[in-house]
Image 1 (cartoon, one colour):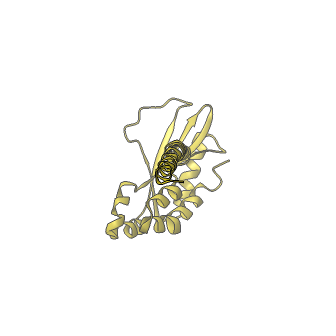
Image 2 (spheres, rainbow, N blue to C red):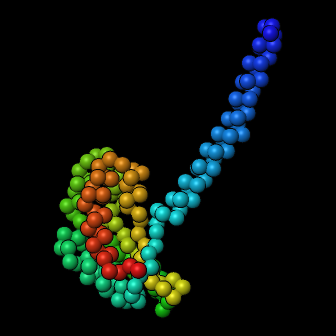
Image 3 (tube, one colour):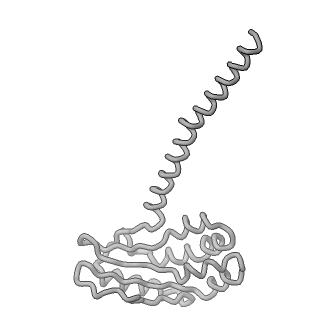
Length: 168
């Protein structure tokens, strides 16, 4: 094999390599990106079907939250229009000053101020009652740092207790 044939073979190999990247890796990366977006859409704001009618679910949630006196649970209107039967929604803010202090004293975690107080929505949809909230476990894993530690070790376990017995 002469020098010219070797150079041609190398060019063909390089061309094959670049074609493999263009037709394999790039579409694969795009597919992975799209799958990631679809996954986050389904999981970042999950809704859970509740066992009880609207009024009872709202009452039980407030009772569960009041059982831990370190949490402040406040029902907020936030300019929502009056909702008729079958379309009602109740939004609650949950805050714990001890955990808020843990988050906000760390300069890198102060951005968590945009997420606190935590919010929970209880609403009617298609004749059923649902509860929705930000998937704190997933979100704080994405963010990481002190925020993830405080949410995973302190906030999430206590908020799960507030939801106990409400969900199907």
